[in-house]
Length: 76
Image (cartoon, rainbow, N blue to C red; front, top):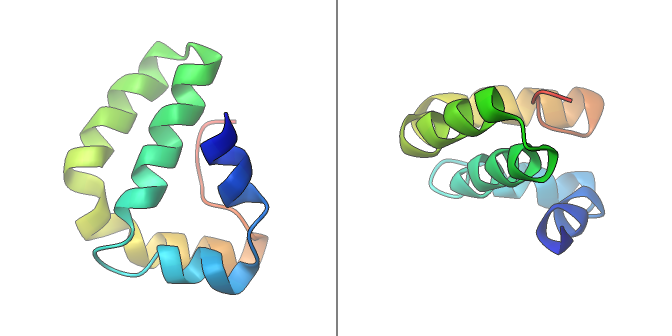
């Protein structure tokens, strides 16, 4: 999707900014869309749960993984 491609093509600095608290919801939506594209039912369920609970927990993990690997962790 265009949304995922947009995020994938951003610089590392912009990705880290999107991973800050209260903006990390962007990466939760990204994970959900990636699973929807692949028709991954487990990923969709986990993506919905993370959309509700994840941003408060995952923002620090997202910052670390973006800094180290230039991407967020998800089922790929």
